[in-house]
Structures are given as C-alpha cells and as structure tokens.
Length: 471
Image 1 (cartoon, rainbow, N blue to C red):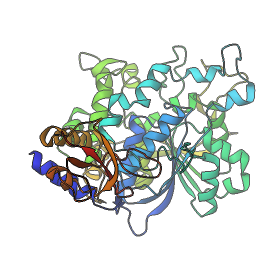
Image 2: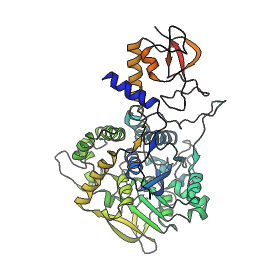
Image 3: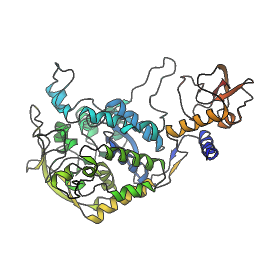
Image 4: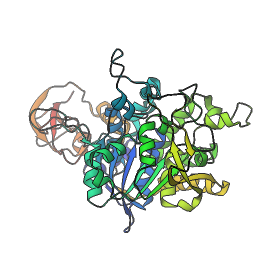
C-alpha cells in the first residue's frame, strides 16, 4: 500500500503542470463570477469538466459568502486541482454597492446594514471550507504569488479589469453565482465594454416562492444573492444586456441534493468528486436547520414551504447546467424589477416582482422530476470524467507520504542543513542516498532551493531540493 502510494506520488512529482483537456473544440469562452461557497465550488468543477465552456476567468465577488483573500485562495487552489492554472482570477469590491453609495456607520468601523446579510459564522465556515481546505485541495502555484527579491505578495487583478480584458477580447457569455457587485462595478467603470456582453445566466432572486435569507428574520421576500447587494441586482436586471436568464429559487427548489446523490458521489473516485462529497457532507452535518433540514424536510420526513426554503439545493450548479442545456427548465419571460430602497431596508429589499416598467427577462418557473433527476445524475457523471492530465495531489496526500517516508527512512524535520541542491526525484529519499549530497545527508524535496524559498509540494517548476542530515 505504501509502495503504491509512493510510486504514484513519484510519478506525479516529475510530471509537468496539470493540463485540463475537458473543453470541447467548439467550447464557448466564459467568465464565471462567484462568491466561493459550497455550491459555487461545485459549479466551478462542473463547468471546468463538462466541456461546453472554455473558462477564461473567475471573478471572486466577496460581498456574498466568502471574504476576499480566502475566496481568492479557494479559487486558485481549486483551479490547480482542475488543471486550469492559466485561468485569470479577479477580486471584486469588498463592500456591497449600497455601502459605497449611502455610506458606512463609521462608529462601528467600515460597516453598513447590507453587510449583515451574511453572518460572520458563515464566513468563517466558508473561508475554511468546513475545515477541509487543506486536506482536499492542492497547494496553488499561483496563490500567494511572491515576487522574486523582496518576498512581497502580489495582489490578484481587480475584477473590473479582468472583466474588461476578456470582454474586449470577445468573451460575451457570463455566469454569475453570487451577488452582482463586481458586474455592476464593471458596468459603471467601462460602460462601452459592458455593452458588448450578450448573455448572462445568473443564480438570482425568487418571484413566486418565499426567500431563503435565514439570517434576516424579518425578510422572507429575498434570495441571498439579491439581498447581499440589492442595488447591484436591480441595476443589472434592468441593464442593456440582451439576454438575461435568472435561475431563481422558483426553479432551484425543484432540485434538492438527495441521499441518493450522496451515495452516487461516494462511488466516484476522482479527486474533485471526493472534494465535493467531503465538503457537502460537512455542510450537511453543520446545516443551520439540521440534517433533515438540509434535505428540505422536517424531522418526520414531510416538507413545508418553510422547510423547503431552509434546505440545501443545487442553486449555482443548476445555473451552470442550464447554461449548457436551457431546455431542462421551464422559463417565463416577464418584465421584472428588484426592490431596493434608500436607505436599504433589510426587511423588504431584494424582492423580485413583475412590473410593466421593468426589463423583460427569462426566469425559471419549474423543472420536472425527470429534469431534476437528470441534473443530479449529470453532475455525478461530469465529476467522474477523466480529462485532467497530471493532476496535482491534495495536501493531505502529500503530507501523508512525507511523514511516512520520514518514519521509514530515518530523517526528521529540523535536521542540519547543507547548501547543496539535489535531485527532486523522491526515489532519492527512499534510497536515503544522493550523489549530490554528502555522506549522511538525504535530499529533502520539501525544502526547495527556489529564488523565493516557497514551500511547494512537488511542483515541476521547482525541481531542486536541499540536503538534510539523516538520523
């Protein structure tokens, strides 16, 4: 067992950077705008492997469920797992639009009412991916990106500039899985470039069903992505974009995660499927309405309007799947407006309603049971695809191998250093000898002799290790 694991790691250590071969030849260039939550990372994995889209950029909009730095790290590391290290990552505004327009409560620091939509406990859980970020994702070769010489960390490019770069380059299809703060910032900063966008699929809003913002006791009219920035939602829904399709709670309420889907995921052995399964299980076990509530049920197995609103559904993945197969859902085509007030009223803002003065957009009204079952099956099938070459291993696997070798071949952390560099092939470590290390020393590839001294587990971009004293 140990030997097989070491052989697998050794083979991977000498490989080039991972390559994603999943996209079809006629794949549509895409910008994905997310607030990295449990369903966002599933949506990203699906879009990276399904084949219909070629992912050009991911925007991290941190006015939703993730904080800026943590959200960017999650995206970089998931892209590493998916073999998409060349995808641009942009970071959006730190505060909801209403905060910037109507001001902050400076007595309480940089704070405004709309920032209460997502509570700090949820931020902590998502920023850490329920404790599995360092066990199911690899280290990213892009985050943090240290500059040679002074060791300072570079900052991801502003979302507005990433939008402009790729829209100007011909990317006209956008999928949003979070608040629309970044997209509105792009619209107001570069209106001419924004006008080039042709299609937006957005997991956003609710029309004929109750909202799902459990953090606001007095608000049953809004969906989270609208409530987190109702000003941005109102502006984008009524913008000049020719085709806007809102994947609303009216549609997503037909596609819960089921126990059967969990069982099917457990049979998939790709690294990304294991990541998604582990993360979703952790979310289920810590769900605010309990394990039954996670499935949209009461403890006795029945469902009510409120239990459905409190459940976990395939919100963002459904937006991704409908962007590839829109006929899976029934769509209505109505003039809609989004409620937003001055100043923000957290009890009423975020409602999406029909109004003849609004812009006519598509929105999901329902899915058949057959379509819902197809959506769940399709997610499992896509995660099971083998189209990522030389995939990097998660940190937990790398750490396990290192500790095993340390135990079996007699070298320890903190042992003496010599300035030599040595072959990074792990077979050197297993043999406990190296022609480039003095007698009594072994080659430790965790101590890479790169110009910036970064700890990089097994990346081909840092081939040399450092000799450490054997014990």
